[in-house]
Image 1: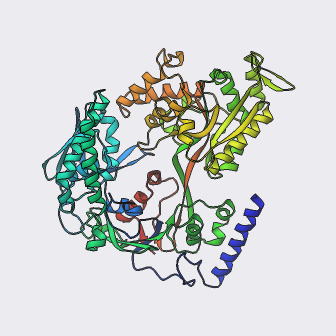
Image 2: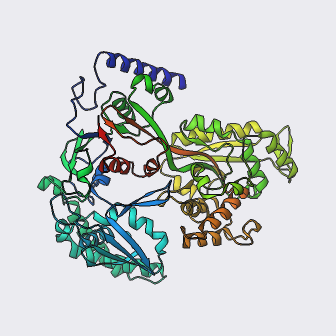
Image 3: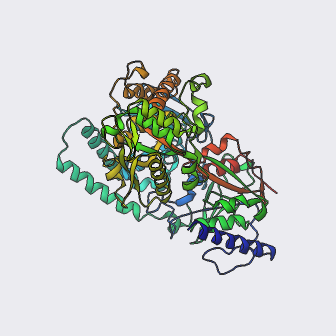
Length: 609
């Protein structure tokens, strides 16, 4: 199968070279013209994404606004994981006082139609998202004391420091619903949002909510939802007011054109006049369009043989990989007595050739071979743990001989039937993996084969489509290949440790988070996590992170196999000024790569050649 795919890629590469030599470009899907793509208009940045069609321009409607999101709607700030700093956008400053978060807006902000953007637009946005999306109920109330001041009063159960990242960086929080566009819906939306929050707060407090009240909410919500779904400002009016740097101007099935907001505060310094999106119909189409020069940047998965020949195929095309803020790991079910033995888990960590797992599953990913398995993403570990502390942690390099010595010291024996536990039972288990995720299946199969070769009795079990949560979160497995640590949402160690010791991984593995450990000075993992949650960026945060890292490295609730990466490709054919591979700006890409393109465009860093 691998050889057959290799021949297919070689055929494609040969075809591409012939077409390039003949002055032709790879044709776009959905177009009849196979000739040279038309020259871009002055200042057009060409990208690829998806969008709903017909395009309605309503972020609350079916399909939203697709990949135009980050260009249309500005957050209060962006956050760079690599430098751990906020980059203000709509906000000039912010402060926390008890349960109140006050945001000061930049002066003179305007929508693309010339209307001023004020605190009232933030209030209308929060009202709409709480009504339509039943989120974020962490915000109990929001007010606008003046045009440039927004005061968020958070629910008493909400940690202001923990919620600050979401409040500042989520693209939906600040500018999604301009008051002058959504005013007809606001009275109903306010009623739905208020009733929804009241029901939620009472349910969390353990109070009983009358069925009549729930039915009233459902009725009001459905009535509002129907009206919102029918709202199509772009279709009906031909435009949508945006506070972001670019708004939709023309949308077809194959192309979406965004034009610059003439009133954006950074308009004077940008050379980009348009964003031209091609429809991301498939990975193959996108990387073909990149190679032919039809796109300026994109992030498709490419075969290794194509990436290895980028310089020959298109000398103007360059690549960079950044962490995708998650790792794929081998999870253990601690409800099973077999996996309650840390010696067995440590032996498995040494018995696995994680480079081989990575190579066969996700060749561009970052391998965890030789890592300390701290629960931190490998790419971020040095930023959070001092080098002297790291030096004291185990280093899990592929070493099956060491794995055998660990087992023998713990009372395991190896005979004709493989490894036996100290109680005389075979070390036998099943590794489950979600079938539709082909890369995970490849990883799990390699793990199973390696552990069989080592002397364990291991089988592979595929989880049927739609059953992943039931099996994994329900703990219906022995071991499993799935996501391990992940920094989705707030890209910070607290997010990964929350997942391991409180969230989905903790639920799946049943790890004893309430059990005191001498590795934590007699505290429990849950207690140290709560300390970190209370102030993830405070003076005591790094100490809590170091404690959890040391504990995780020794106890191995999971064994990370590889860190997922996001491959990004950009062309210098039309634009100069792309960041160096180690520029912290690239760390903003996971979860919304358009934010990187936006900053490059609006800051004036990208300049036409």
